[in-house]
Image 1 (cartoon, helix red, strand yellow):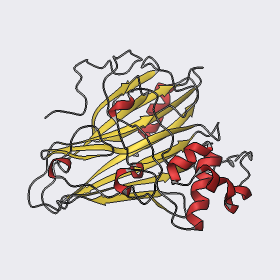
Image 2 (cartoon, one colour):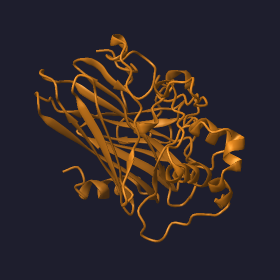
Image 3 (cartoon, one colour):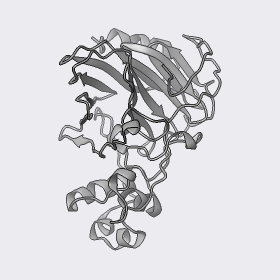
Image 4 (cartoon, one colour):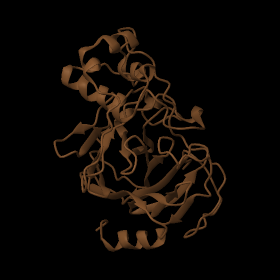
Length: 334
């Protein structure tokens, strides 16, 4: 079965290595203003539904992500002038630094779109769906963040069963079916959940729980069809453009220790770490730049459900192998 990206270069597990730029379908946030003449399914630009929603998104974009007015406009569908004239905008203290209290959970927010989360290979991902993307903010930088796309894609014996952007045809594209846009559900404890039911009855969802020094993640898939599902490979992508010091166009700063995938900051003192199990493969794409720990669901009979376990964390120190061993000993994937 053709994958979204074909590569045949063996990875050098367990040490820093250079791997060539592979074509990875990720994101082109070519946002357009939402207006009555644009179908919401054709654009990720979305007008907030009420004042509470507008306040959340303006704080998300202007304070945390430090969006420009034009980026905020692209994400909300509001004009620059509408944003500037809105009472909520005038009330925001955009210069206020949001310090993270000691032992507070990592800050995780839905990624709003409006700003391209990648540096290179922009043509490989058009009109991305923002409901699969979250921003995880670094504990040492109130405005530095990695964007996690969970999931970016799901393959099965049926073909490309889900894709969080436009790049190659899914089984739904071939049938002329457009999936409606969704949003993350935000919970009072800071956790996020998202679930989608596909037209053939396959349902899947993702849960993100921020902890003091890491994210616990879970993805489930329920087979609502009348046939067995197999070869269910999932792509989970961590994009590093928004994380200063990690945005180098290279894979020489990556560590491959299946199922763990880690990226080192330019100064060598910090790391971003991710893992998913059961693991299919780890890999990275320098032009984005991004890194992957891609899992695979066990085969799933009709009316069965399968689960994947995920991890993401930041680390400040030089003993990355020791840190990964410590994480493994926590038993997070059991």
